[in-house]
Image 1 (cartoon, rainbow, N blue to C red):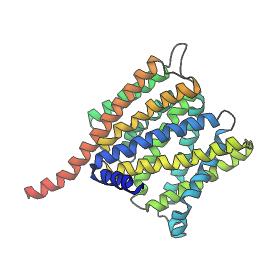
Image 2: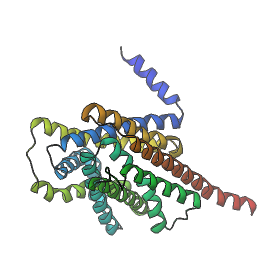
Image 3: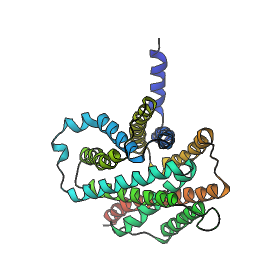
Image 4: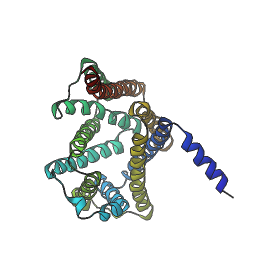
Amino acid sequence: MLDRPISRTRAYWERLPANAKGIAWISVAALLFAGMTAMIKAAGETIHVTEILLFRQIVMVLIVAPTILADFPASMKSARLDLHAARIVLAATAMLCGFTAIIHLPLAEATAIGFSKTFFLTIFAILILKETVGARRWSATIVGFIGVVVILRPTGADAFTYYGLLAIAGAACAGMVMILIRVLARHDRPVTILTYQALFVGLIMLPPALYFWKTPTFDEFLLLIAIGIISWAAQMCNIQAFKVGEATAIASVDYTRLLYATVIGFVFFAELPDAMTWIGAAIIIGASIYTARREAIRGREVVRAPNDKGLAG
């Protein structure tokens, strides 16, 4: 009886343009990421952040275990163990700082600052990948950091806190992780990159989690399991979005995460962003979208240049 509606829905989905599918995937991912952060904030009221991270990694390892085991031990063979080690440490630091900020800052504020990883990505691409960046991308990066400063308010009665600095540190580490993934992708297969982070981030979190251990109640245990499942689902939706759609067409939709975080923060945590947070968030998002578009234009120019040269010859 349900076959016809399902078939019609599937046929409608198949007829959609690739970018429309990408927008649908990224919209779901944004909602899931916002839900994940809300769950982390709720769990953090009674459970230490390292224990939350440990449970998250255990759940995610169990979910991806079939992929890892299907090619084990080949999935562990790597030409750049040094880069894997750096990525694991940076990823663990990014999550530890970012999750701590989520627990202690208003959701909307922590989410907005997290978007600044785009600007750190630009800086690290220059320093490590030796990419050439023009004046317009530099200007967008500087403007983006001004947005962060607006949110954090470094002077006055509402001056930024330790947790605001942690949010920035988490964004910086996340930007560096993205650079290392670019480099690792030249040497190792995706399953190898996935395997190392899935296994070793959890191992890093094990000692501090045991030190701060609090045996979760049944409800807390379900919440921790849900964090792991939703984290995995959000990442899969995000990957699928960029797989089927153009980055410039779908990237801006990811910023709906801020709206979700605002609504969730108001409904469940009685948080409402002030005017400075909205202004700073608008600056960050605008600069991020511009940076993403410039990156896409630059990518097309790089691809087109050899073709033009060949035609001229």
